[in-house]
Image (tube, rainbow, N blue to C red; front, side):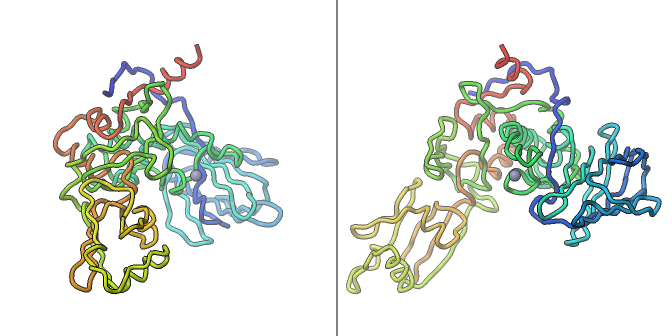
Length: 378
Ligand SMILES: [Zn+2]
């Protein structure tokens, strides 16, 4: 069951530090004010205000940051801070080395020097960050009800992992290591509404502990328990039959190979398939998800086969068709937790977001984060 308790306190007072272009070893950037204004400050410099169109060029050097300000004046700083008066100010950031696309962000920016690159830290309100993440993680054309689901998942992840990069001086990175974040939500108003309607809400388990809100692209018709993938069981990550994920874009996949190549592959697991044996013994059906592929007296974990061949999922049948092996797969991803395509399908069929979360996560509760904090502070 999912219980929706009263929620009145928005998570508006929670601010995050997100490391931008965290995986790209950026050496130089151009910061430009797009909307509102920014107060720019650095050690040894009188703070100045910058307006839309004003740009700063920042280059990482051996002894600090070489900056050319909006008036063309060069300086050397250890750190530089672009402070936004509120969430309405927008800046763009264009890395020059390596040359990357320009992205727009809300909130402030702290620039410093880290070991091998610039340190680019976006200081941003939690809910504004969730809007940006939901757009990337939730895809561009999903139903509004799905964006509510996505916002709760992304918010739960963010708060659960808020200390993940604490030693590096920020909360989360903008790569897939944490959650993909490419700046402010640009295209879809439903993303913003989905975040606003669920503002501050997170998913917790029976002990009021934030869950690890894992999801994948498509379950293929049946999800699997967390222990199948990560060896540790979680009460809220149990297998569920998932007809909503059938007949969609990533529901099925197929790969083929020669029988002799398959037999050769089995040798890598020390499985010797006799030349005179009936090759139909190489087949496997997974009506429901199995742990192992059994061949003669031996077996291989289906997850290992998936890994070896980089299959989309470990939910596949093996059919022997003459001298060919046909791998007929279902789903895309690890299959644990929520199936995104299944959840989008449910949203399209007018299921409420609480029902969707309730369907994929076992015995979870939706709570406002700030109530949760109060719960534990007493
Ligand atoms: Zn990270």
